[in-house]
Image 1 (cartoon, rainbow, N blue to C red):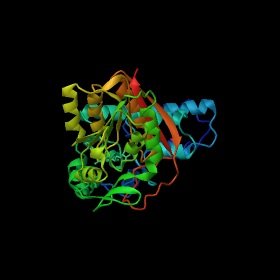
Image 2 (cartoon, helix red, strand yellow):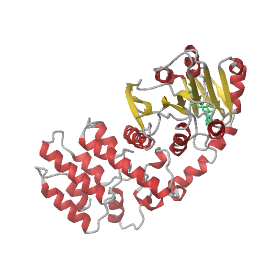
Image 3 (cartoon, rainbow, N blue to C red):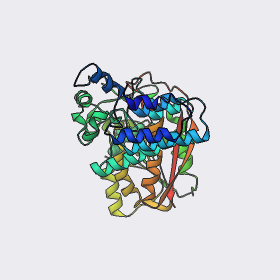
Image 4 (tube, rainbow, N blue to C red):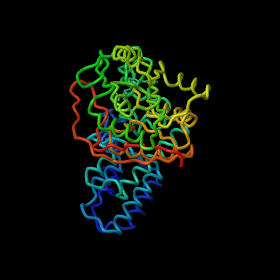
Length: 397
Ligand SMILES: C[S@@+](CC[C@H](N)C(=O)[O-])C[C@H]1O[C@@H](n2cnc3c(N)ncnc32)[C@H](O)[C@@H]1O
């Protein structure tokens, strides 16, 4: 252990301002706030290079793991200050430790969850980091396991493939249907009893455990419905939400779908013949801009749920839908943003609120509990690991 890690084990009590002074002095002396226990061990063993164990137990992890069960109000404020200082000196909010846990995961597990000042501090650090990253990269990546950081790679965010771990990852993912839309659109799909999956690598495109979420989304879309409602669903998948939408008999029900196998399935199921259905064949990036240019249709509600797209696509989508939605219209989407970790899910909840506010829109989230373990049997990897769902309803403010 280094002096920095030692200090953050919080051995001496009470936890008072002297901790803040000592921490600031250590960081000022040049010890990086991202100095990991693994690096300390390597240096102690006389190694120049830290073996890439994939684990990065940072001072922030040590601090959070060392928190006593009970903290007085004053101590809580001191811990917040310690976190502020660590973040100020470049601590990462999303590094993974020897148990594959980020600082936010550790707080959450210890019951310091949403609304707790320490947890919210990590979430805010995540939001700032994401916005900064977007400015630096002029782009934003969907936050997932690949994006959880390695302190050694903080300079390499623009070139994730230079991360030794990511380079094997990128070889594996060259044919990754969940990551690359081109690959996905060429992949064969298969409808199983409860899911739509990619045939070869069994990526779950859509699963029927989402049915309640789809019903909730449909209800939002028709909250202010009139008999001549015109709605748009982007991404047909299993057609779950489209069947729910049909129950409300909208005047016009547009469906935008890009994958040839899904379009074939829609043809087989008679969707092209339904009198109130208009199928937009192709990627929304192409078909919606044509609608926008025509200026002939405006929607009461738009729902978005695609596959193999990233948050950067959603940022582009915002530009499009603001021109297609009626002033009192609603926009909603399947919210799996960062949902493989609760803290990432919370970061993205805030990022979405901030992004839509730039368009004069307000996002209200309704939280619904989810079954702990949806059935992931047929699919290669789960894409939702949280016990709750944040359902977004976005309207012009
Ligand atoms: C998760 S599924 C949608 C599930 C749907 N909400 C349901 O209730 O069954 C995603 C769908 O979006 C389609 N898709 C993916 N990218 C698209 C794009 N850029 N434009 C249009 N559709 C797309 C996929 O082919 C797939 O059918």
